[in-house]
Amino acid sequence: MAGRAIHSRLAREAGFSVTVIQARNHNRRTQAATDWPGAKLVTDVDELIALRDRFDLAVIASPTSAHAENAAALARAGIPFVLDKPIGVDAFEARAIIAEAAKTKTPFTVFQNRRWDSEQLKLIEAIQRGALGDVHTFERRWERWQPVKNKQWRDEDVVGGGLLLDLASHLVDSAIQLFGPVKRVSASIRHLATAADDDVMIVLEHGEGGGLAKSKYPVESRLFAGSLVAAPGPRTKALGDKGAYVVTGFERDYSAFEVRTAAKGAAANTGGASSIGATGNGASSSGMPDDEAAWIVRGDQAERIALGHSQHADFYRALPEWLAGEAPAPVDPKDALRTAVVLDAARAAAREGRTMSITLDGYK
Image (tube, rainbow, N blue to C red; front, top):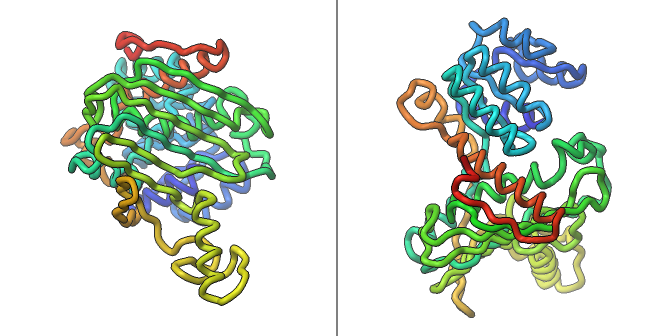
């Protein structure tokens, strides 16, 4: 699904052509033939490697449990590749992939596309222009109300699936990008409605002066991912000693605040009671806001910042210069290893019911 819904779309937007597609599922092969009529369809990685002269770069968008195997095969063949996040199921696999690529001098990068989210980019801008002062607390929630499950592999695979590896890999990467290496980790990881984990809370303590923020405080990041959350909380809060950055809803994942406000505004404009589906006062026909915004908040004062569109295709736009050796990788694989180390620590913290420490040597 990630290959077609995300990578294929972004590659096209960035001007790439897909020439070879590996897929076993009949329906996905049919979809691939429709999406890219000129592409050669193969059933396994060995067949793809045999067609090396047809492409410059391979993209691995397989289930996470197969990342290490597929990455090793491409690295041994010397084929540059993009590896969808997470880099592997744990830090052991992450280190093995990095070592195999280094041994064969095969360049690869990891698809942490959420670095190009508009909410993340606007937060970086706000921090760097001093609007928040020094940040001391960061919160991000990726919460959804999905009581009916579709039996996808991510819900059933207890090794490579679940929200810790899926959504929390983005959350942790974003926090490390902003505030630097993590020193301590505590966590709660549960599975409520699926075989794999579907309710995750991670608390990270960063060192002072780390990441893009370079805060004088040891920033605490509080990260949440859940799929059984009937009233999602505000998407992002970054609290500083001069102000706060707040995003209440992002990419149609809205908190209860937007739902109530949109319905109330529609009711006011129509002069009576309203359902969520009514339109009015900046709400779309779905009852949600027409545009999304961040806020710089200082007590009862708030400055609105339009978020605009995310720029995920910029990851793909950066690939040609990287492949030519003219620019660094869009995402350094060592960053993905740091995330894997933190996720491993979160597992241990949840299992043992205590805070886990990570030394700088632990990221190597």
